[in-house]
Amino acid sequence: MRIESLARFPLAQLPTPIEELKSLSRELGGPELLFKRDDQTGLAFGGNKTRKLEFLVGQALEQGADTLVTAGAAQSNHCRQTAAAAARAGLRCELLLNGTKPELPNGNVLLDELLGARIHWIQLSERVAKLRELPDQLRKEGRKPYVIPVGGSNGVGATGYVLAMIELVEQLDGINRRVDHVVFASSSGGTQAGIVVGAKVTNFNGKLHGVSIDQDDANGATYQCELADIANETAKYVGFDAQFAAGDFTVAYDYLGGGYGIVSDLEREAIRLLASREGIILDPVYTGRAMGALLDLIRKKAFRPDETVLFWHTGGAPALFSYAKDLI
Image 1: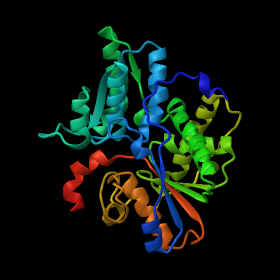
Image 2 (image 1 turned 180 degrees about the vertical axis):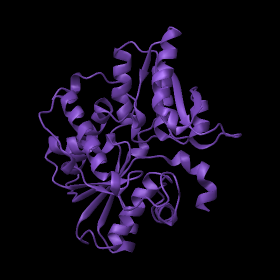
Image 3 (image 1 turned 90 degrees about the vertical axis):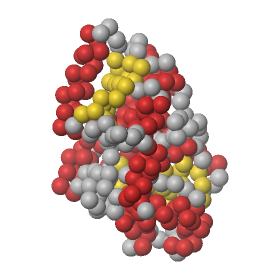
Image 4 (image 1 turned 120 degrees about the vertical axis):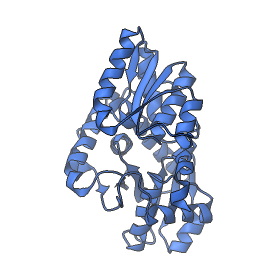
């Protein structure tokens, strides 16, 4: 592999810690629970996108870009971390956010503004076109934009999670622990694709479970093909000789509730339980849903009591503040 030679701009505080959740595991009657704390990557409240942005910003700088352009939901964690990465790297940042400008910015929107990003409010249906039009407009103004896909989920971004999986395996070896299952939120696909590639690189034998945040069963086959495409792009980018197919990805599609960003009892219980039992804060869109799924699977005896399950905390806590009414 050639990861060491790839363009990279340091942003994250690594390695992120692994914590054991003894109280919650005891309350649930097993399995043993570990948390990989990527909410502590350090950049503007942290999160999984920071790992991806190290390689995306590295490539942007290598190409002589002066502006990062990306898109996401109004409370996008990816957009917040992109704005922070741009500030750190001395780049401008242009964000395309779904919806209308709030009277009082809060959560990630407030942070986007504090971080100096210029926000363009659009409708979701306009996103694809706007991601073409805005860079063209910036080029006409003499700027050099670098476009980052939603979630930073391409082969360059997912490289961050190949390294994250190498990091995890080294940490587990260091503490002489075995993990039987890894559970994490899966949405734009880069995190899961990178983890799966990294697992093959390291010969990790645990089972990898993505929890779908916004794709249902009807789109499952298509989504897993998208994951395979990102994984193959990633493997090629890092110089790892492997091929991936849709069947290499396990995704749970049963926990969508009312849809993307709609908080239900599943997320409410997970957020309150982790906060009150372990002092760990989850977010309402991604980790709250994924942890809610994990709790349900434990209660359904999907894991043996003597197994060890690692939950990969991908961050997102700033969005909590914009969902206060849904959480009380």
